[in-house]
Amino acid sequence: MLMNSADRPAMLFYQANGFRVLSPGNHVVCAATGEQVALEVLRYWSVERQEAYASAEVATRHLLGQG
Image 1 (cartoon, rainbow, N blue to C red):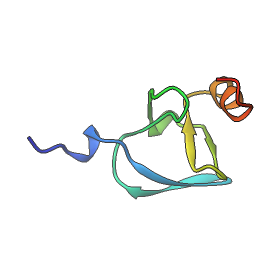
Image 2 (image 1 turned 90 degrees about the horizontal axis):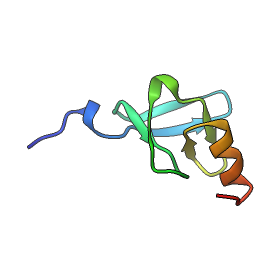
Image 3 (image 1 turned 135 degrees about the vertical axis):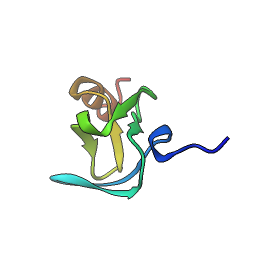
Image 4 (image 1 turned 90 degrees about the vertical axis):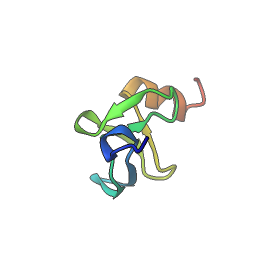
């Protein structure tokens, strides 16, 4: 069965003030929790690590090595 772009994670290039879509999809996967994060609500990522996070709390814990 073929998946359409809405069924798979997008590949993004994270920048300081946004991100660029490299391959289409409707979500990314949180680097810390594995949770799917819809692109419409994605607000937290690391430019240096090129990773997305589900929330500010998750990002902070992950980046501090606490989770």
